[in-house]
Image 1 (spheres, one colour):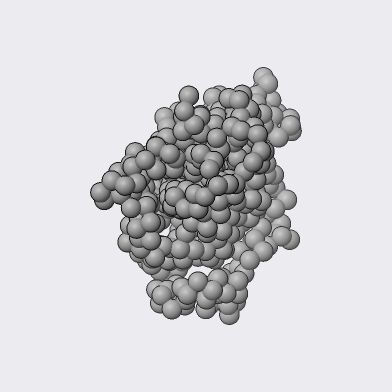
Image 2 (cartoon, helix red, strand yellow):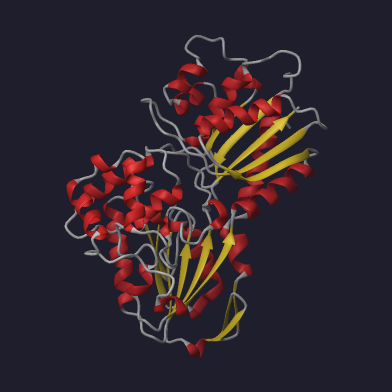
Length: 441
């Protein structure tokens, strides 16, 4: 196999390891009339109804596995996933909505979910299935605001370079379900179990999906600092600016805080994460005959900088070869050009540009750099990411092929489409941030 094929195989092995088919059965099963969740044995007679709700890019597959495992014990449910990620379900309704910017379907789906929660009683069990993307597909609008107002704020955040935890702090304070507030929408005595596939650094529960079932320590004051930091404050729709100002004055309720009584009825479990994916990638690389001298699950910062600097260090690597380096995490891009792409394609393009530089002695390693999103999408494009390698370097002298120009214009998608460097996996039904697989020969 070629290095490019090996890199894709390693990436695919990592993604397979964090698919709900592999994750949920370890934490949910039925033995007779007994439901076992997180190793707790619950007699079916202990609950009047068992409902399932969920949101995110992995929620359809999570619901599908949950239905299969629970069978007749399940009453009904409703989940919301990203457009194009729906799967056939029996008792659970599967809806689609917009991502990364919510759309009208996000509002409708959220309203339907809240209608279901409003029917719950203190004797019911609620199973909540959460994964990355929930912040967008579950959406509501502050009082007095319109949906276009909310879309404008989300778009500004996505293009600002803000970190995911900063974006979610803002989202929580423009919602009545995020930041733990979802717990307030069901019967106060209902028992909650939250299955979570993490798509954020450090697997922070309050950041995943904007933390709808966990307490939130951020405040309206923090939101104002974030908006000021990224120059967004003056661009806000007037009604959103007023909502935040009212929150600062205590006229709008804060998100759920750690001492809230609702938290006594909820249990959480992170069942999938970037770390699990990286372990599977390591095993796959070794099975293909690669040394794995470096694994890091803290990748962050500017995508172009990460691509350039890591490629530079790999060019000078002198250890055993062939070697496979693995990175996991999530970078950011502050969009300044008019092109199309995503953070992973941008990172791979930056790597490619670096491969063309400093080719003096000591920089002669052959490198294959694959960067992709584990959810199968990257930015506003339908591809997972891109690969930079010698095959593309051989095309650099052709007319109309300029990696540096594409990088400056943030036009990675069109560039990689020209040189056959896009990586298309389709929806993976999971989401544990991004993975970078670098092979050094």
